[in-house]
Length: 92
Image (cartoon, one colour):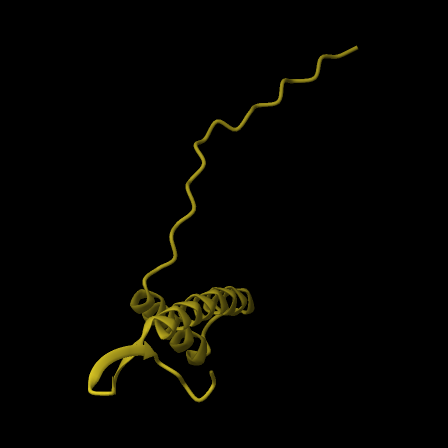
C-alpha cells in the first residue's frame, strides 16, 4: 500500500478579533461605501461585498447610539435641588 503524505498543519498564528471601529470611523466608512455604490461603477460581487460591510457598520453604529442614549441623563430641578434622571425619548 502507498503511504499517504502527512497533512501539513496550519502553524500560522491566529489573528485576534479586531475591535469594532469607533463610531466616527464606522460612519465615515459607511458614507464611503454608499457613495461608491451610488456611483454605479461596481461589479455585482463588489456591490454585495459593500452591502454586507455596510450592514455590519449600520449594526455597529446603531448599537453605539443605543449605548449612548442609555447613558444620557438630564438635569432636573425638583424641590429646589438639582438632580439627574434618565433621558426619556418619545420611543421609551
